[in-house]
Length: 260
Image (cartoon, rainbow, N blue to C red):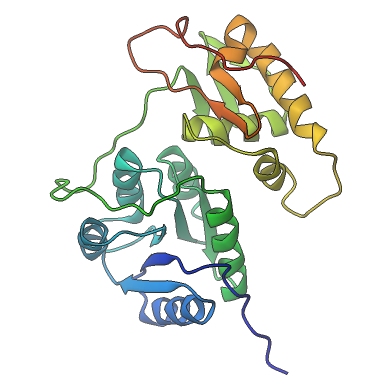
């Protein structure tokens, strides 16, 4: 019996940018069968043009696209929107995967991969996304922009370390993952369930309170500004505060700094 692809919970529009014809056609077919509206292109410049013309809920970008690579496109998307981005990368390109997270990618998938796994990743990303509307790039973006939002906490993805106020933070792997997710998208709220999915992707049995414990410990390590930088949004979850340079973080108001 042929295994059927998982069904999408609702119709979403996805851009697939992949220069390999076989992979592109396979992804387009599988996503379409899974209930997603899919538009595919074979080059980076075509992807940017489509992103200017059409509203998408998710972009799937091969890193090694001709003309404009997937990393530059991801940076352009992140400079204007919170639209999720999934990067495709060849096996062994660890530096590209690290760079992908630095420019704001939500996830990556290493080739070769199972189409079912890709659909599962797409569903998870769209479930985590808090955007209520699809996104389109403004016209005439002038090509890729290596725009990186300012944030007072510096994340080193390769070394798995973080610095704040001139000092390296002594973080556990779970604290690092949470901080990385929050600081990549300041202002975006992550629910406890979403953070649990990030920390325990295999579905290990954990209590929801585990997220609160990690957040409490993370704030403690950040010091007096911890509750202002990592905020609680009551009834929803947690977010990294938006901080605009060169203002200090002192005026930032913590909506709820209590450890619950």
